Length: 137
Image 1 (cartoon, rainbow, N blue to C red):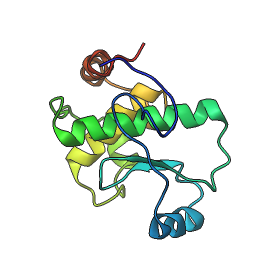
Image 2 (cartoon, one colour):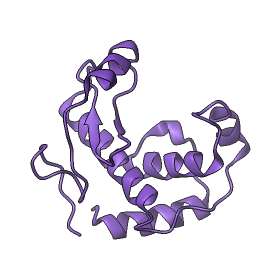
Image 3 (tube, rainbow, N blue to C red):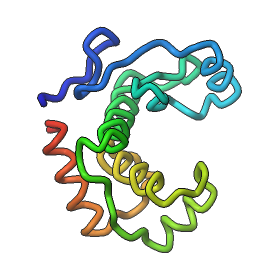
């Protein structure tokens, strides 16, 4: 599956994009720090209230595409341990579901997001497989 970071028509890394629904726009407006998300319909949506530059938006698209691939089970979900620092940083993330946290970390490591903190060798190995699966250079 060749990777590409393009517009809404083609999608990104095999995952479609769409404009946010009204309820999602309300969420984004109230949470401008959330740059985008993998919506429940497995489409990537970006926050129009975000001030990210195009290159930063590309990283968000990559991150969210990875989340969709893992969510769909197109690649085995990560099963690695978190570091104590990651456990602390993500203690209040979402619902606290460890699988969601692992997927978030993998996607963030893949896209170069420093909020993933220092990845372990096991985490890096998983992200290497994810990168190859998605065709990310």
